[in-house]
Image (cartoon, rainbow, N blue to C red; front, side):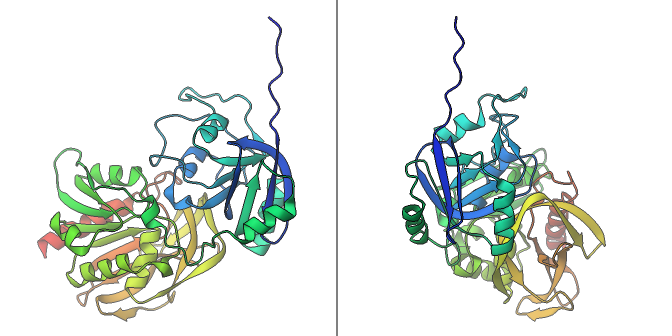
Length: 382
C-alpha cells in the first residue's frame, strides 16, 4: 500500500491585546477562542494543567518546547474536563509514546473543542508576557486578519473583576469516603477543586463532603464537620463575597480551616487583608517557597495570578485571632501562606497559596494535610 504523508495543519493566528501577533499552525480544535494569556513553566504534567479548573478562561502558553510526548491517559485528569480556553505550544509531538497513553493530545484537544496554536516562538511570547504582563489574547483558525481579531480581543472579558467559581464547581454535593478507619469529617467547598485533594485527605482517614461553591454556612454545618476546606479555583478573589462571609462565620465558630490557592486568597480577605493582581503570576512546578514556621524550603507547584497583600513581618490582630504570614515565595517575596492563632497561641486555621496536592517536590508539601488533621485533632481535644 502506498504511504500517505500526514495532512499538514492549517494556519492559525494569535493576537495579544497590545497588538503583538504570532502566526503558526492550528493545534487542537478549529475555531476561535479568547482568554487571558499566561505561561506555565512546567516541563511535565501538561494533562494535569489542562484539567485544572483554576485555568478556566485562560490561554496557557507552554514554555517547554516539546508537548504531547506522552499522549493522554484516563488516570491523570484533575477534573471532569479540560478547562483552558486555549493552548499554545511550540513543537507538538507527532506520535505519543507512553505505556498509559490512550490517545494523542491533539485528538483530546480537538474532541473537547479546545482551540490551540503551534509552531510559534513561545520563548518570545513568554518574554513578552514577562515584560508586559498577562493580557487578553485571541487565537483563530478562521481568519488571518490580525486587526479584526484584535478588535474581538479588546471586546473580550477581563480577568480582573471576574467571579468564576460558580462556573467550575460541582453541580451537586458528593462524598469521598475515608480510606481505612474514619477519623474526621471535612466540608470541602469546591471552588475549582482538583481530584487529588480529597484523595490525599481521604488517605489520612478523612471523609470529605465536597460541596458546591454556592453552599451556605448552614450547608457546611449540616455535615457536622471537624474542619472546613476551601479549594483552588479561578477568578479574582476581590470579586468574591459569599464565600468570604461563609468563612468568616466558620471562623467565628472556631471551626478549623485549611485553604489552598484561591482558598488562601479568600482566607486573607476573611481576615481583613486585600488582594492584588500579579504582573504575570506564578504558574509551574518549580517554585521555591519557605515555610517560615519550620525554616524548610519546598519546591512547589503554583497556578495563581492574584496574591494576598499582608505584612511579611509581625502579626495582625483580627476578630478571630492573630494572623501572620507563614510561607513566602523565595523568588519575589509573594505571600504563599497564612496562619491564624488564638489568644493561647494555638494554631486555629491556615492556608497556602501553592498546590500541596501536586507532586512538584515531589512530596515536599504533603505535610500540610497532616498539619490539617493535627489541627482537627487538637480541636476535638480542646
